[in-house]
Image (cartoon, rainbow, N blue to C red; front, top):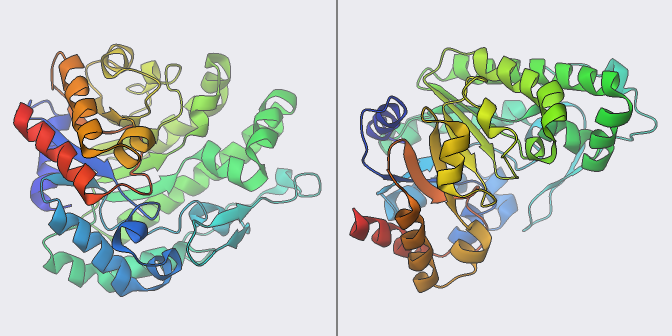
Length: 343
């Protein structure tokens, strides 16, 4: 992200512009395949990581890529700090081997040190090693980033097991979330301390969308509010592309000002749920249209989306989630061209 693009985000958040911008979350599910490099090389070769991100930025200069130059190891990133085993196939996304639920003493779960534990120091070191090269492209590191507390918990113990824990042993679930939430605050703080250009935080947590209202308020709301209220940054970006009807009315109160949501909720319905103060980032179908459709399908979907919008105020047009595998250059250019033709 360039400093000018960061300034555009400030203006959108502060309500100073109604100009419709295009933005996409991009990371390892899309970039290696699009660049035709093995995923393991993208993770382990800093130069290829740099080149892949730089190629996206130069090919689509009209797009604000969120965050751009994201240092990550897929879903293994934060769970690795807790000691979870991670499996890295040569050309497939990595996976987390959950901790043994029956035998592991989760009541004594310890908070990791983000400067030394798991893959986290490698993530930060990559950003340090590549910082001057990134700056030469005219870009900066805008966000400190982490998976969210329920997301990390589900990778450590299993999604079904953690959701059952909420219902059957709520005190144990609260303890796990407390340790993870405190860790996330430390992890984000560590990134912010190392990179002064960062003026935002980005949290990704789809498991929030699996909860009903009562469980959301009891288990997700306190953790998310703690995280988003902990930092005095201008951009507080939350991603949840699972159903978000339950959580959307609480976004502003939790300190969130920018929200990437899924295709379950129409964009104008999301505006009514979230309120006027939240920047909405969405929500063209990512897989069925952007990845699997033709350029004409993409144009039609974008056109329909734009027709639904009563206003472009605090909206960044995107897909309903992160950029999925398989999205082609021609489909992205069709997306961009359709937006340009309409505005």
